[in-house]
Length: 193
Ligand SMILES: C[S@@+](CC[C@H](N)C(=O)[O-])C[C@H]1O[C@@H](n2cnc3c(N)ncnc32)[C@H](O)[C@@H]1O
Image 1 (tube, rainbow, N blue to C red):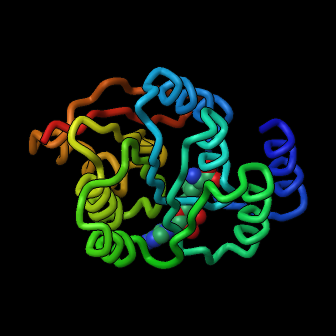
Image 2: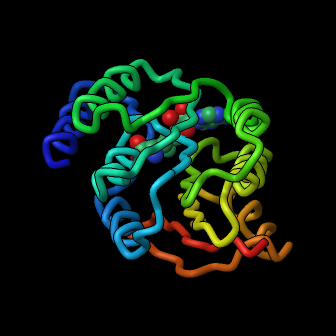
């Protein structure tokens, strides 16, 4: 995991305009959460980008697998995919395209909820976060866990906060914790129905 993180730092030095990725504090927080829940094995993620979140989640236990949905329009994402594959062979599956289309299509294929944990960190502007949360909840097993990134004023005000609050108000999820580092915030929740 350390050599993967070093690689991401080198990437940021090499390229300007690398899109946001999970902070070390956030990776640690997600890792602590997954460590505390040994039943988490199959993980769904929206937002691969440089693969920090995917690699962090894969590093927790050898039987964990990550299904990651991303547009894959960032040129460095291919390289990062190769790097995650090298560190965690055959445990990452990528589904390329717009998550508002690919996640419902995936759901049609699998039929039953298949994820123990979902991490939503894709598009941040309404209606994408709302569709992403709602579509991923359909793939999350009853009692499974959800983490939504950028539940904070600085990065979540264009739709992330509203989308998450709507799922709470609908009684679909209950918040377990709200965590922060600098001006970034993220939430952990459990699916209720
Ligand atoms: C903040 S980055 C994710 C960071 C990642 N979790 C990490 O730790 O490296 C957001 C990602 O969401 C992807 N994205 C944005 N809108 C999307 C959409 N509609 N469908 C799929 N992926 C999307 C972008 O391509 C980008 O890779």
